Length: 449
Image (tube, rainbow, N blue to C red; front, side, top):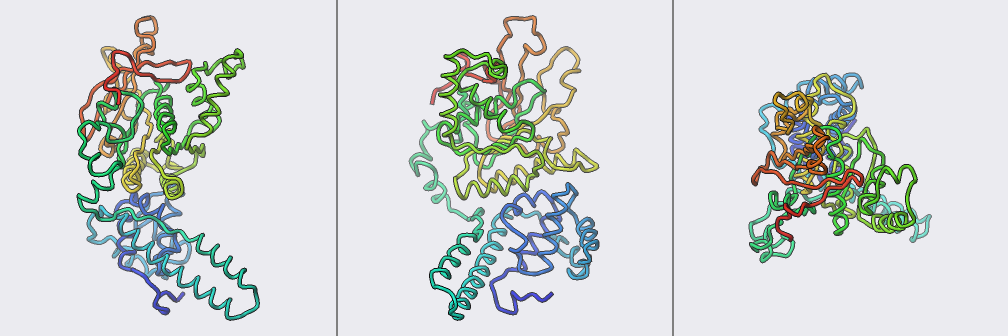
């Protein structure tokens, strides 16, 4: 097939396309950065389109993306020779260094793609107009529809001076330097956690881990609800719980109505009234949820990018990390490591904090001496989880292990075990199990900001 792009002199950057494809072959997690921004049609060369299409298909099937797997799939399609064979695939990442500003290169390719689309759309409109066999209004509407459907992509990776960074900060230059403005990131709603972390920061990957029944989902939903109630746009990807279960928990937590009593239908008139008020309030929040259980990081990236373009995006919550990835690869640890790396790249590319929930392995339960507090080594299928995360929080409720000790009832700890840009420590919380709700403790209030 001929590459008509160059015969017509249309805008294209094949060298940048090669760099992007080579980066994906070096580290398939890079696909999460460009996958949400670039479609197959955005590549100018037919052989690049075929290679990228093969990469997307392999990723969707849960198969590692490398030179061998890409070549094998292209061979099965009868397309290996049309991309100049295995020699061309080898040349894509041969001697290529690790690329840190891949989002900027993807934006360049997208820019050229949009310009090609514009040229072809205007050419088609001129031809329709010259034929003079349809109303002008119809041609205009067609052109408007075609322009509206253009995927403009994003401008992640723009180079900024320090002055531009400070001026772009919410509140401007003065707010950036204000020493009283302690919470620089998105507030969690929990004062002690905010004191230690300064909030959830754009571009950060935060792992929230714990054993089953510790309250991981409850804490994440409480943080999401606090943000949404303050008008922040939140996207929740629930790979374990259905949409209606998720929203039910949020409404009951907001209304302080016993979740089990709601499920059984044993509610008083006052509780029903309170619940209706909470439901009316939650329904107005800028909160977006999906319970699709088959999503990869690439799927999540594409949805988040679209949401950020149309509504804005302040927080991404994923419940939970080990359920991602589609079909299991032979080495599950490597797969989870790839997912965590991709989530970090996604957070950085979208400049949005990602709160990802994670399970812990069983070593917590069997540790000698009765010390069940989680440690970083307890991260299940950890691989590079600890390395990729900007922060790791553990949830620990001592009453789970010592139910006979009444003084432990309702006590919970959020253990900040790792924080790249701040201290570690413990935030004591109050956990109201019947409402699936965490609350600040009076002795751990911190600074009310």
